[in-house]
Length: 434
Image (cartoon, rainbow, N blue to C red):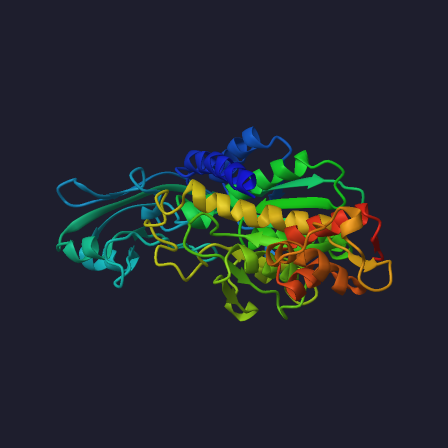
């Protein structure tokens, strides 16, 4: 396990470097920022297939909006001094703001200014995707400091016919049954709530691609949150419903404070079982949330009639950590160690799914492990503890329990149970029944 930990830290450094590269880009539901991000992601994982869906396309109950792009935005006082500037921080502009070039009094300007009274030192992230308006975001302290006068508001943006962009990767396995991963590409410069998910998805794709003799197929999707997931489902629902056995939506996976699961709608899918088991032994004090606390694309993949067996995995959960959707969610909030921890959890989930099965002992009474070289021939308290997992697996491998159930019953990590099963199979003591 120490070798695995070192490997994860190395991968964490790589993921953090990718997050640094994509952090400055202004992304939204649509536009060149999303395409620029995919251009960078494809340098790390060329297998990403990018698709464009035109404005006006009907996707279930939704419609692809106009494409939004922005070149410049600033707010000046009557002395020509810039109060906020998009080029300094792209969170200063309300996402999807329509173009504006107006002079306004402070009273006229105030309805277009957004801040957080409870967090007066940070810039909030604000959007208006489906109602045309414009606005600027600033710290509440800065907003309170504005004096009466004449202000110049400039936003050089465009809302035109265009398209929504999403990316996907598919790695076939021996079975057409799939494991599904998703995250999103739609937020501007936020480290945990945006860049961490993309970095982890890319690194998981690299891991999956390197796997030899994959039992299952793997699908990984990066799309704008909500409308992007809905768009992808509108094109692939039939195959997803037929093939996905477990899915994981990944968001806010770069900090090192917590591990979290947001359960499926009823908390009873295979994905719930897998992630709960891995987290139980990775960090026993992890946070657990029911589906009523949902907020990311698990809403779409678990919607009635869609019912993809999927959970959401986070470090600190969205809406919970104080930096969420603010300028404080920067690169200092995430770390190579935080990303490495998420990578470790997800790769353990992959290995558990790949190796899982139901096993049955094929001899009557307790097997003699010593003559098969599976336990010392001298017995003591120490040797008893060392071989207890072997005996416990043999005791519960009765054709009823898969590896997850065995792990929970004998209170040992699934990877250790997997190793024990391999030893017992090699010794001719176990057979796989399902």
